[in-house]
Image (cartoon, rainbow, N blue to C red; front, side, top):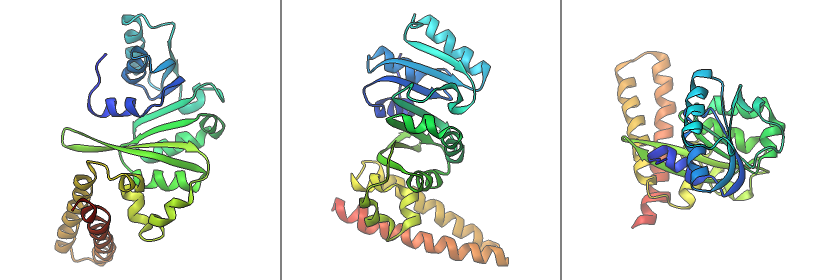
Amino acid sequence: MVLNGRLLAIANAVPRSGRVADIGTDHGYVPLYLIQKDFIESAIAADISQGSLKKAEMLVSEYNLEDRMETRLGSGLSVLTPGEVDTIIIAGMGGLLIRDILMGDETVARSATTLILQPMVAQDLLRRWLVNNCYTIKDEELVKEDQRIYEIIIASPGIQEAYSDIYLDRYPNVYYDIGWRLIEKQHPLLEEFVLKKIQSLEEIVEHLNINKTQSAMERMIEIKSKLKQYKEVYRWDIKSKTL
């Protein structure tokens, strides 16, 4: 099994451990790869879709890994018991859905040592929820695939350390958008990532300039404020450190 791009980055974020659960596994590529590389002892590949799980089952059979990789049909963390796995992967979903999955069975979520989360949207809301609900964001990764930059959040149960105040007290909303761990380690893709965000906000401002309604003007004020903060973060936390 060979992985590239987003899936490889998710696999590389998994700590060497005993047992991993991949929630919403689809084909089961990530857990199968981890087993083949002997990075983990065994895995549970779970999905709410019978069709998706069937693809994973066929892959397990093809590689003769029935003794190390188990498939389970079910919703979210309901397929697991507390303490059954060391690491939980939830990837390729919206940030709010990932949040709801973690909230759906907190006993299971908090019994794992590591959570590997890869939200497709609402990354800021997921980061905020994690910090406000006694999870620590240990690390973050970015990976570029087909011109899109994906965000990976590595979290663990436990109260977030005070270091976050350095960032979150200054521009709290912006640092939830960007991810302060990325700034802290000056990720190689960070500059491109933030510039894309700035460009996206500038395009929204341009669009709102055409629409002169009251709601558009109110939205314009909000977006311009965030845009200003993004540019300051880019100037002081990114560009100045690469000179």
